[in-house]
Image (cartoon, rainbow, N blue to C red):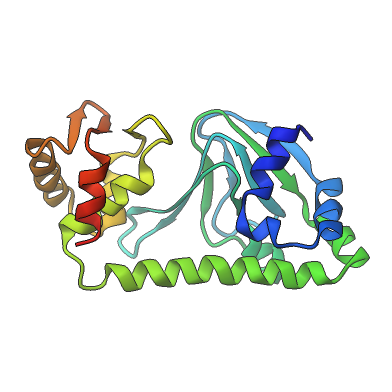
Length: 221
């Protein structure tokens, strides 16, 4: 593995917290996979296919609402691991995982993880800690969202979806509305207000952040 990929993986708080010997076991079993934009990594009901980490590009985790609408659950960026829940409990995948743009992933298949965990069973506890970390993040997001204004939730969603260092938001407005929990018409109204305040610029299929500090202030309201 290239040193820059290893450095990126070790910048993740979960992976860096694993004992060095167990990290080496995982990396020894890992394989790199390159996917095109829109490639499906797994989908709802699929059997578990192992643990994944994003090296380059982006992965989007999506699910369906009760009325059949598509919900964007999470944007997974480089250095972040995902797929741990089904890897741990062996149950089917609960959502879609889709590559967004050309994407490079580190993959530890189920048999490979089993071999590593046989060599050191503490890896099961490590994986359980990853499940807990993601659960705590989800609960924190839900708690913070309760009682917050649409304006604050939208600012937070834009910040999370923005491309690192570029200020561009690579997310469809239907997805953005689902993340914020509002109708598309309500989203348009609030985006237009942000545009009037020169916080963002809106063009066809693109939102560009003009004032990150301003959005951060609104997100804390």
